Length: 189
Image (cartoon, rainbow, N blue to C red; front, side, top):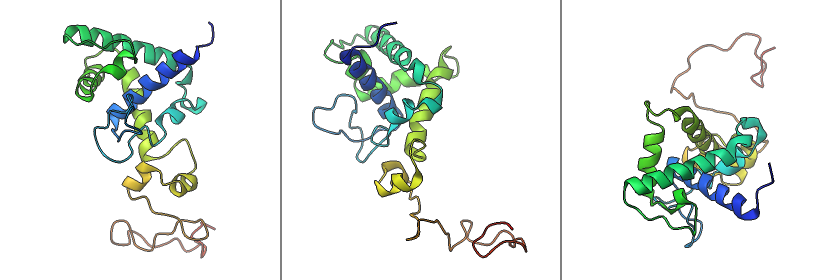
């Protein structure tokens, strides 16, 4: 199979960004941003690195991203015909849909009865992972960079020594006594 052209790569990236933005919306990166719909303020899945995570070989889906994008655009074309919409050809069909139509299409594709739901749910899960755990980068680097997902979730910053310590119990009370062999640093002996 021949390597994709730069235009094909851009279309794939825009389509995957539009999908990730539909799952966890964010604000436009610039006034002419078509992939990110700008349905909310702050950074969403795209700003959190969804494309970087999807393109990371560790996900196991990287080799299929061209097919994901192609299928999403095929579904978008069918959706547009069904709803009497004109998508044009200046951007990929899914990107051309407004946020409401993108959302409706993704709801259809991820519905329990849809035969491809596992594919689209896996893509959605990776979009969430980019936002809520910054799985594609070290937590320290993500926090230092102001990762939008970790900041939104209020992820605690490490101490000056780079270690995380939690002086207050997360449940508001101690749940168990420390093991007698626990070292002062909190490690088991």
